[in-house]
Image (tube, rainbow, N blue to C red; front, side, top):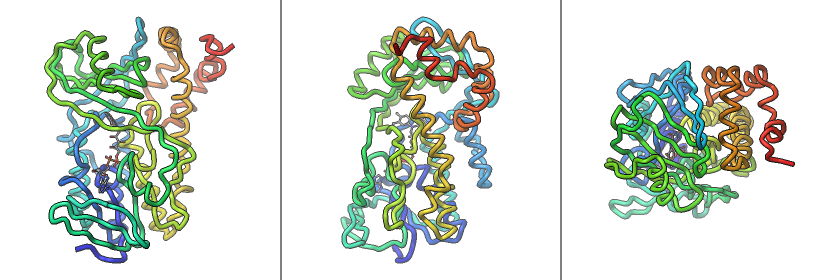
Amino acid sequence: MLKQNMIMIIGSGSAGSFLGLKLARHGFNVHVIEQQGNAGGFQKDTGLVSNYITNVLEANNLQLPRKLVINKLYNYVIHGLNKQVLISLKNPDFLIDSYAFDNWLYEKAYDYGVVFAFNTRFQNIQQGKVVLKDLKNKKVYKIKPSILIAADGVNSNVAKQVKLYGDRVLYQGLEFTVKTTLFKDSNTVHVYPYYELLAWVVPESETIARVGLIAKTAGLKALQRFLKHLNIYNVKVLQKRAGLVCLYNPKQAWVSNTGRTLLLGDAALQMKATSFGGIVQGLKAAQHLANALKLGKPVMYGKLAKPLRRELYMHLVIRKFWNSVPLKKWDLIIQLLKDNKALVEVLSKHSRDNIASLVLQALKNSPKLLNMKNLATILNLTK
Ligand SMILES: Cc1cc2nc3c(=O)[nH]c(=O)nc-3n(C[C@H](O)[C@H](O)[C@H](O)COP(=O)(O)OP(=O)(O)OC[C@H]3O[C@@H](n4cnc5c(N)ncnc54)[C@H](O)[C@@H]3O)c2cc1C
């Protein structure tokens, strides 16, 4: 049964459950509300995360269980229309089973005493009370938590209710798991930056790959076109996934005026504008949020999370440049990368989830190329 005077988290995705776990460890009374019957609801994402996830987990005395890792990815091939460049990673990325990952975080949080209410939907807020509906017995509960956390995804109803929804740009993410032997190297991710907003092939094994993309509109048609583009349109589709992704907005507030409602994960648009990955960013943000609550100062969340804001902003800057590159210029970009061994080395060694250090090293090793204005001029993008 739900108790008064507790922290209520709406959403048991990776961000919500991880925050629940952290807060329970700090001794808080935490309840997580989830509208689906299981942690994280349905699986919508690829589950590709950088090695940096182990840093975040280890900093919290957690180890990524091996059984959650479907594959290790050591190489990236970035494609232009006709050219490509290979980047070999010093530390491999992981393809994780994100459904199992959410469940693992849920179990950890549960073990620490977090109360989970599944099949329960956050409806709205009435006179300061959160209205929840038990979807099985149709009962409605009203409760006033001391703190309310919105970890309910990009379309956050909580954010809407507390007028923190802001200006959101959402895109469609689609992915098919297919049977194919076209991509023989099972440890190499293929990235197509020129295709829609981004397209990818992430192998699970030598015969199975996850093929997906992010599109502004008509995602399904775009994915079918992409499969044709790759010459794998006649393949067996084993699984289909779809969901919305968001563009980080630096103006998005993460804390309400009262300091009693805080946004986390996709609900706070904490997603990298380059790859549209948000798993690691949600975990990082949860650490800052938990620290702010531990200090008894929820409004400190924004201040503590400044490094994350900076990181998300850098991804947004790169995305703006990325979107400005005309299709036919992508080969030139790939060639520039190929010619710049120092930059390729930086990309091999430094995680995209530690982009501040990556950009710093890149600037040191290759100052000319990282100057966007200069790059734009080289490519003749601007007059
Ligand atoms: C196609 C696609 C591919 C992606 N690939 C990657 C990838 O490879 N790597 C990566 O890092 N990220 C990827 N992402 C992004 C990643 O999925 C998200 O950033 C991440 O899942 C965000 O976690 P979250 O906990 O903030 O939100 P979510 O995982 O969306 O969890 C929100 C939870 O809130 C629940 N909920 C919603 N509304 C209510 C309500 N009213 N009441 C109760 N519960 C509610 C939902 O059921 C859900 O369980 C991808 C996204 C898409 C769409």
